[in-house]
Amino acid sequence: MRPNRLESIIRRMPDQQLFNLCISACLCLYFRLSDRLKLLIARRTKLYSKAYRENPSVLVYIPSYNRCEYLLSRSLPSVLAQTYKNIEVVVIDDGSNDQTRETIEKMFEGKVKVVTNERENYRYPNVSLYHWFAGPVDAANLALKLSRCEWIARIDDDDEWQAHHIERAIDHLLQSKSEFYSADYLTFTHDNQIIQRISKDTESGIGGTQTWVYNGALNKIRYNMHCWRKTTNRVNDTDIQDRFYRAGVKITHQDLIACIIRPRDDETEIGSKAYLESPEKYEEFYT
Image (tube, rainbow, N blue to C red):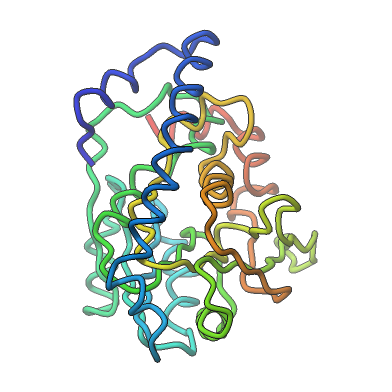
């Protein structure tokens, strides 16, 4: 997405401790006020109330950059195999040059919509770990901007959902009248050995971003492009989950396995450990 003038200026502020502290402090205050206001407004909209009708629509969005092979082998098959069928699947192609758009449109023939997000605009310094912290923010915010569905769910391009994930989430949300749902996920090795089961955060009660399903009227609460400048909650999803919690969103969690996460084919680690394992590779990948 094209940033406004103020956002463009903030993005180009140097990566220095003083600037980072000042920007983070200002944004923290801004989000503390604006997120609460956006939640109050969202609860008064028709979209919010429509979410609790029978068989509501669900937007499933997948941010992706040059990982078409993982879209084809992991995330998309698991999304299209969901037992819940009233879903709209959108891949946000974040300026890929590996023919992601052409390949997906050809293989899935209208079942999956592809939206291209240009990478022309400067986002943050080319540091491997910053890509982990804030990499999908611009693409995710574009998906939220375009969303018109009653519920919103996100999965990363190299993760896999359990077949009943969305069905169980919607059933639980409708029964509990909650606004935000999450569940547990498992991490595996390449040879299918379980590493660990990850549940909810002890403070917010929210599980991993790959398991989130939340009311579509909350789409005005957007990800923070400057989360990498913070000293805590520097990852885009932990930043916004803390903001959902502090804004007063009605949160629910189920102790069910919703998602499977594996290392990428040429790596042994997942998450931030994979970025730290090969920083030069990722900085070259995102150049």
